[in-house]
Length: 162
Image (cartoon, rainbow, N blue to C red; front, top):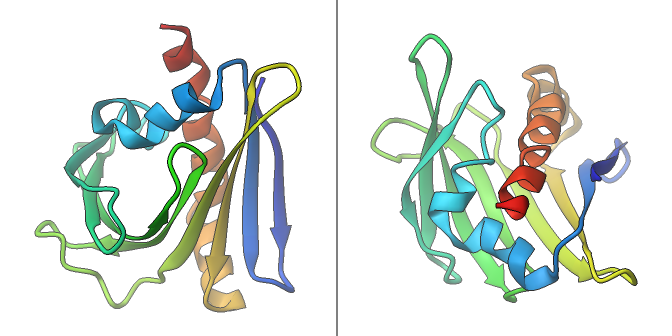
């Protein structure tokens, strides 16, 4: 069933992707907590991710890069704010250089992942991204964030079926 809704709220500067999965919360949590599983879906299909550092402890960090079809690499980082395994996490998300240093010329967002059990034994997952300004929200949406995140999340069903 995967992505069920994408909601952009210009008033609150948020974009929320909601998805449903036929798997329990603990199994869907593994898609975030296991870097080898995370890298199989975090990037859109044509931009696979590689996680270099992956520590989901509050205050710790995650670094990764996505490799495009032409071989170019696009680097990113997370600073973990909170973790409530297996029900969610919050993190600051941004672009970086190849060494993991934040790219201060690009926007950052606050990400909040929430996993909830559904009545049928499955899981509802929401990924809410909060932007610092309307301009930054528009910039990232124009760069393909909405389509990219929907395509990335769309890969989770196949992983859960393995």
